Length: 397
Ligand SMILES: Cc1ncc(COP(=O)(O)O)c(C=O)c1O
Image (cartoon, rainbow, N blue to C red):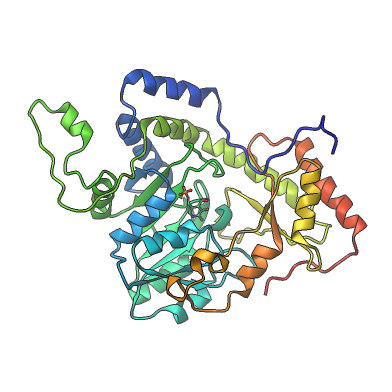
């Protein structure tokens, strides 16, 4: 590799002077956790997605835990989800002593196949936990219809989907506007909006919102801000088990700046995705497609490799040229933590999920990525495929 050529990361957080300035403001204010910045971030996030309530927490995994608990998921229950997702999705189900029930993904994308959900429902099913994988909205309308027909709550794992949109009754609406019962977001640095780490729940239910606020702060009956502002002495109570799932004001102040930039960040990511689609169209790769009713934030750009191409070899070839990639989304049921019989139930064949893990790679895409960087990725792939035997594009089946 030519060492003078800068490396291209798979992702890069878009953090700058505004975020640094916001941190200074918080440090100087003297209030650094779950205070006014968190409250402001919550109301700005709620307004952005069009939700009645938003509640900030420490990360998306804790958001998922609270969401599942709020809809009543408990020991012995089943929750329908996908194996083809980050392990946190299923871990949160297990934190409730419930069983993740895995169904396969669609043939033409990386999201749950709604046609497989109904057959997976049993008398123990307590929730459907769908994932907007890689920022691409899943078929929410179909999933919510199933939930309604069977009186099963729908929780959205929207970890990757801040700013993604779905067409709903003729209107483009943000993921997180409550169509399902609760949506959970991540602000990890690989996501489009980052606060270092962080999470958010949105819902239309005041009761769920009340529970989230109670549980995230140890089950404490009085908030710190209320006690601090009171001219009377207040003693707090702890009537039920809670957790420390708080977000700090430092994180929230960064989040507020990120939210302000978000429309611009998404515009840029959508242009990069379009450029990839145009420039990679002749290489025999299977390219991601937005359904007519979805607008992705392109949190990740994941391509399918031609069928006889070795994933690791392509990734290594790119890495040797200073280009970072990641393999396609993992399969939870293949991990040791999920091998035992009582860790999950597999409700359908998972062949598309496995194929997507083994035959796809995630290419670099981040705000600030230059045309030159994008061309380097495209050229490296073009040269590689020009040298290897022409092959059939990937068919996930
Ligand atoms: C689909 C999905 N769910 C949940 C999570 C967990 O998010 P966090 O790291 O904020 O807990 C992630 C993080 O990568 C994710 O991609």
